[in-house]
Length: 154
View 1 (cartoon, rainbow, N blue to C red):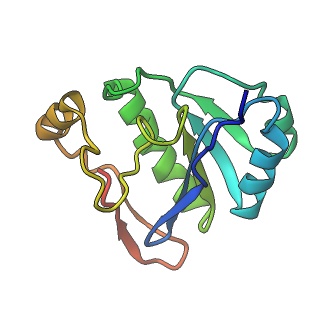
View 2: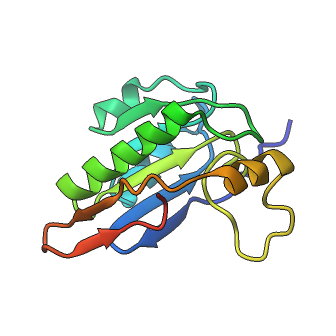
């Protein structure tokens, strides 16, 4: 069987916030995955799919793994959204310059990244969620330089 052609990790930066969007590794690709995480300075991974690898080797490298799974093509629960906003607020205030990795199975469906000019990037359930979403205004904080940071993801 031919190996899967996985998309390369993509770094997304907004002001002092950095995210790495990637696919999920397997046991066979875990060492390369960890290498990529270290290359981008990832301190936390948010895994939004079912587990496909043991987190022990990742955590051994000092990288925290958070399991917040939700169904592919659907929107996250209110609890996951609240946990996500809380994570961003704490991490980017306490660890300026850190990078948070997010992955689902292929890095395309649940992972919160939309490629530029990608037709059909949202499905109808996701679009409905965004239409009904109300900003929580919870990501306003001052970074270590004292600059006010208003996150685009609120």
